Amino acid sequence: MSPTSVSQVQSADRARRANSSSDRADRTAVDSGQVKPLLGASLAELTEWVQQQGQPAYRGKQLYQWIYEKGVRSISEISVFPKQWREEAANVSIGRSKIHFRSVAPDATVKYLLKLADGQIIETVGIPTEKRLTVCVSAQVGCAMGCDFCATGKGGFKRNLAKHEIVDQILTVQQDFGRRVSHIVFMGMGEPLLNSDNVVAAVKCLNQDVGIGQRNITISTVGIRDRIRQLAEHQLQVTLAVSLHASNQRLREQLIPSARPYHLDELIAECREYVKSTGRRLSFEYVLLAGVNDLPEHAAELANHLRGFQCHVNLIPYNPIQEADYKRPNPHRIKAFVDVLNEKKIAVSVRYSRGLEADAACGQLRASQA
Ligand code: SAH
Ligand code: SF4
Image (cartoon, rainbow, N blue to C red):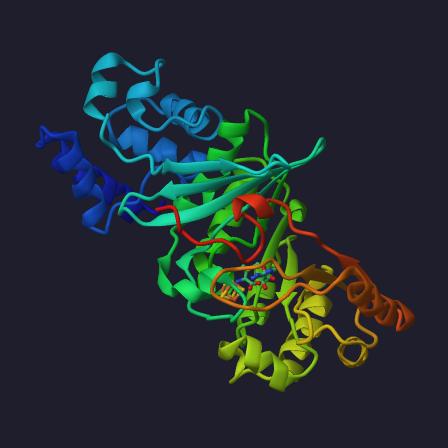
């Protein structure tokens, strides 16, 4: 939080104090479009803020711990704070969402629909294994890219998520599961590189304030011209996953209308540059659609594009969505595709998405139960 935003919070606080209804106060904070909630702020920023509220500096550390470790939703819950200040500051927005809907798939994957302060709904998925708890986070409400096989793409774009709305998704899953989140994948709703500033800010906060290693964070992008290059400038330690889905430009445009102005060759060149300048590995995602992009010829063509590239190809057998009538290839076709890539010495794995039964798998995310 910059000094400007601290004073924005302050003036909003004055507005809130003058307001007897907490509902109205919340709306004031959000609707003004100026006030940043406390979630997402660093220890230094929270310390500065408590001091501006007339409180001693050490309360900043307490506030920081209660927000990031205990996951409080209101200052009124912070029992170590003086009662009078808790009451006064009860309506200051921490910036937490509400769980609007929650469903558990038989494989224990949990899908959440989260309601944001302005009533928009986003999806978040918690994917547990014995050793890991991975959160699939959304970067936007909806998506403008319109990929033909993706439920989010079919629903259109509403808005970008703010930094705190991204961080909140991780805290929500962590609290609901009662265990620490170990990995994050930006593979929920939206295109992260069309919201780069907030995504990068959220990654830094998740790393420094929530304690998640950058190496355990993956950003998945459909590829936006120059945005991969710009991401490289931040020198983050995250893993980049690039959604290719096609072995030539014609096929790619058919599946991803937004790919028209950005040729596959240019995209792959930008990816090569990314690896060179960051030293980080990169993976390509490829949704397998029966009879569309899953033939051995496609695999050979893909291998040609990736020759000499230290990368990994993740094949994702298509997860069915209502709005499209693609089919998932059968296991023989999938194996034949893998075999061609193996022969051409391209590292490859097949990712069977979890959470299918709860409509929580890759590409199935939409705020349908809202
Ligand atoms: N917008 C980003 C990240 C969100 S989508 C991107 O496109 O990379 C996350 C992944 O899910 C992408 O690789 C996407 O292509 C894949 N996906 C979308 N719809 C799918 C579907 N119906 N079945 C399988 N994977 C899908
Ligand atoms: Fe957007 Fe990614 Fe879905 Fe394409 S696959 S519509 S880029 S969320």
